[in-house]
Length: 204
Length: 204
Length: 204
Image 1 (cartoon, one colour):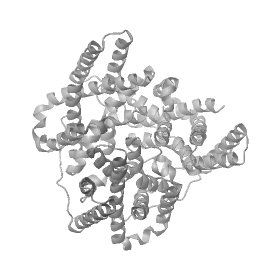
Image 2 (spheres, rainbow over the protein chains, first blue to last red; image 1 turned 90 degrees about the horizontal axis):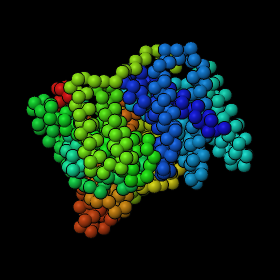
Image 3 (cartoon, rainbow over the protein chains, first blue to last red; image 1 turned 180 degrees about the vertical axis):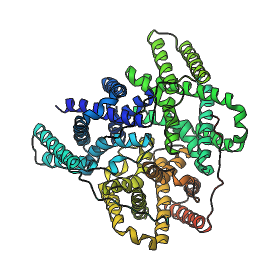
C-alpha cells in the first residue's frame, strides 16, 4: 500500500515542482530537473546523511521516468490545474505523510536512535520542497505556511510510538497515515499555522 | 586526452565562478570558494550521490590549487576578459562535455543502470553551475538559457549508445566530444533554446 | 575542553540561525530547522564529503535537542539580545574556531592529505552559516564581511603546522584556538576585511 501511495506522492511532488519552475519561466529542461529534485530530493538527502547507499532512485529508474514525465506533462495541463486544487492538495498531503513514514522506516532499519529516525522522516518529507524553493530562489514555503513540517513531525512521532508498543506494522502505517492526513487537511481547511517569529534588528 | 580537457574544463568553470562572485562584490575569499564550488561541485555531488568515496578532488589536491588559483587570477584579468568572450565560451563548452563524459564513466564503472549513468553525467556537467548560482542567490541560468543541460544529456546518451555497440572507448569519447561541442556551439551561435514554461497562477 | 567549547559553539550558531529565520518571519518550525542547519550543517556536509559515516549528530541526539532548544529559546529572548552583542560575537568566534579545529581533526584521523584537512576544517567552520543564508535566500555573509572564513583558514593552517612539528595535541589546540580568537576579535574590532572583487560586465 505504501508503495502505491509513494508513487502517487512523487507524482504530486513532481507536479508541484514543475509549477514552481513555471513561475520562474524555466525551460522544459529546468522543469524536468526541478520536478525530479522536488520529488526525489528529500529521499536523496536522507540517504546521503544516513550513509544509505545505493540511494533509492538509482535502483529504481522507473521512478526517474515517472517524475520527469509528470513534470513535463504538467506543463501541458497547468492551465487547467486550478480546477483540481483540492485533489492536488490532498495528493500533496498524502505525499508528505508517505515520505515521512518511509523515511522513518529507512532509519529504523539501519538501527539509528529515535531522534534520528524522526529527523529522517522529516527530511524525507520536507527537503524535496526546500530544495525546490532554493533552486527557484525563494525562501522555503514550508517554513512559513500552514502546518506542514509539523505534520511530518507528528506522523513520525505517532509511528514511532505505535512501533514502540509493538503495534503490527501494517496497522501502524494505516493509523499514522490516517491521523497525519486528517491533521494536514484540517490545518489547510482551518488555516492553522504555527506562531511566527519576526525579528527586525540588525546588530550582528 | 580527457584529463587534459578536464584540467582546461575546471579552469574555465573556476573562472566563470569567479566572475559570478564578482557580480555579487564578494571578497577574494568568496571568489575562491565560488570558483572551487563551480569547478568541483558537480563532481562532488555526483560522488556523494553514487556513494563513490573518496571524492575525486580529495585525492587530487593539485585540482584544488588549480581552481583556486584560476579563480583568484580571474580577479586580476577580469577587465580584459570580454575580449576573450569566444575563447571562454568554447572552453566552457569543452568543460560541460568533458564533465558529462567523466560523470558517465564513473557511474558506468560502478555498475549503475543506464538512466543513472546518464544522470551521473548530467549532474557532473551542470551542478557546479547550479551551486554557483544558488550561492550567488540567483535562479540557475542553466534552466533558462540556450541549450546547455540538454547538450549534456545528448552527449551522455550518444556516449552510452556507442558504448552499447562496443565502439572502442577512445573513439567513443572523441566522437561524443566532437558531437557535443558542435551542438553546444551551434546552439550559442544560433540562439537555440528549449521552449519555456511560464506559469503565473498562485492557487496552491 | 574542545567538547565544552563545541557545545557553546553549536548553541551560539543555533542562536544566529534563529535570528536569521526571524528576519524572514519564519514560523517556529522554520526557526528550529534553520537553527539546526546553522549549528550542525557544516559538520554534516564535511562528513558527507569525507565519507565519514555515521554522521556526527546521528550518534549524539543530545546535540539535536540542544540546538533546537537554543533556537526556540532565542525567539523568546531575541528582543534583549542586542544588549549581549559583544558576548554573542565572542561566542560566535569561539564557535568558528572550535568547528575549524574539529574539522581538521576528523580529516586528519581519516588520513586525508593536507589541503583536504584544511578544507575539512573550513567546511566545518563556515558551511553552517552558508546553508543558513542560502535557506534564508540571501548571499552568504561569510563572503562579504570582516575576516571570517580566512580566520578559519589561518587556524587550520596553524594547527597543521604545529601538528607537523609534533607539538603535543593539547598545547596545539590551545595555541591555535587562542591565536584564531585573537585574530577574529581584532578583525571585528578594527573592521579588517579582505579586498573585494566587483565585476559589472555581463557579456557571458
